[in-house]
Amino acid sequence: MTKLPLASFLAVLACLTPGCHAAAAPDPLAPTGRWSANTRGQAPTPPMGWNSWNAFGAAVDETKLMASARLLVDSGLAAKGYRYVDIDDGWWLKRRMPDGRMLVRTANFPSAVTADGGTSLRPLTDRLHAMGLKAGIYSDIGRNNCSQVFGGADAPNLPEGTQAERETGLYGHVEQDIALYFREWNFDLIKVDGCGIRGLGRDNPRVKAGLYRPLGPVIDFDDLPRTDIAEVRRLYGAVADALARTRPAGDYVLSLCLWGSADVRSWGKDIGNMSRTSEDISPTWARLLHNLDTTARRALYAHPGSWNDPDMLFIGKGEFDAAHMVEARSHLALWAMLNAPLLIGMDLRQATPDQIALLGWSQAIALNQDRAGNQAVLAYDSAEVQIYVKTLADGTKAVALLNRSAAPTHATLTAEHAKLTGTIATTDLWTGKTGSFTGETTVPLAPHETVLLKLVGRHRLANGLYLSEMPGSMNPAVDGVVQPQPDPLVHRGLLPWNDTRGAGEHPRYGGWGGAAVDSGPYGQQLQAGHEKLDTGIGILAGSRLEVRNAGHARFTARVGVDDAAWGNSGAVTFLVYGDGRLLARSAPLRAGHALVPLAADVRGVQLIELVARPAQASVAPDPVVWGEAALLN
Ligand code: GLA
Image (cartoon, rainbow, N blue to C red):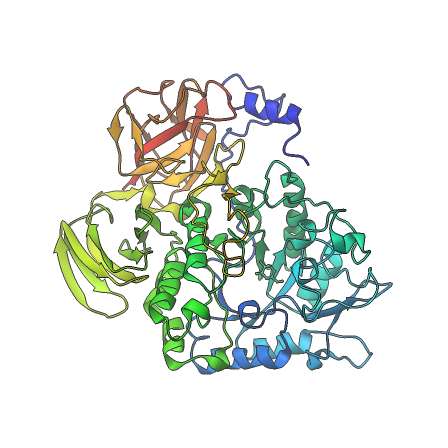
């Protein structure tokens, strides 16, 4: 158990206030002039490819893998961007003793047999590379992997041998394994799971039976206070550092698989190229909604180089199979809009022409791969219909109208949703049908349907961009969340294998209160000084938000303490920094005060930092509003 030790926690809190002395502890709100989200590795746009897990579980082998790899190329999907071919759990045989070198299960990967009696996956990665593909491998941050921890006794391809030989995870072997996978075997991506630090406490029956050594648990999946967040971060940080050393050219992808636990929302973006936001997806509509919701309100936590990952595509199975193409299309459309990594999870040998066509939906892929890297923002939210808007690099808008329900309905899309004005030209990105509207348009939606539209029109803000239109250029370096809470807005879908046994699914995934676009941090409408706003950034007091400036001249906003504040933070001062220099500051503002204009000349500034500094430290800081925050030409 950690959290922050009490002394340093109090020091950090003290340092949120103006009287902080640098000698006491570093001031987390001091400007750094530096973008702090991850820029290492190679994920300028969300990684795309194929992964073995949803198709085969741990029963993966070379024949199955290469068949899907071949089909990626032959179907044209690789040319459309699906390049990573990732081996998930099940590839290993054991860790050789005494030198600790990992051995491949050659019964399933015959090309890994080497002349000296060892094993190597280099022939496999060479073949994938020769096909123009990239290769991904899988490991665990603990000593043991997910199948060992959570698989049944009959789980296929469990590691073999003595207890030490069965320790196939990275724990204690980071340098050795990363060098093997990335230097010798030449992989391009690694997914690092967290089961080995989650489920093998002393009480675990498999530990008690002597099958595995106890470890932690470092993560308590159901309780953040009992999770050693700093240690989890340290372990993953060591992997990131080893990768950067092993591949100094930065040609790799680090995929974090912590399912939203360990407060990974707040730090995964600083370490990895993609980071899972939820437990595993399964091929049901309810689980799609669940995984979607864990990512949907986190637009500010995704940027080129570090993406939110609501898990792999399940197109081709269950409620996304060939008989459910409406749901399958929603799946791809939503994942594309959220800048989710697009990892196909089906045996492509079974794919119908329609499924290949859907996976190759060029317009959806283009949205996903847009270089601005703006995750779609929720412009309208309800349990039934949601409207997502994504601003593309060329200033046009993509809109997803989602019917979450099983009944037909409709969505009324307004110009305001898209922050456009005047006559708006529309293209349905699936049917190709074009049209136009002024003010609003009503679109029918079949059960579970997502209609994806491209909108071209005049921007409501004629001479610049609202920050809400550029979440990919922003990073909540300090989002103000002091005590991460479970997120109550995540759909808690019935788990098919549990039915209604037990007490159901409880809220999970810390980070409730995180920085939000066009909404307060707790999902409420942005409102300050009794004025409601439809545009702005909602964040907690005690926060520092980094904004990349690509040539804009002026920053403007109307700032204030959100009307939802309890007064815990006292008066809040809003400060604007440019490359580390103070450019503008507000008077200290209290809840109820009218919004105050704040402006700064940002010509030539690369990094703007927006700081909301409270007079008073609190474990429950007040929400504040950077209303109508914009960068102007
Ligand atoms: C975890 C991950 C999955 C998959 C399995 C493999 O559950 O979340 O994506 O990698 O492990 O065992």
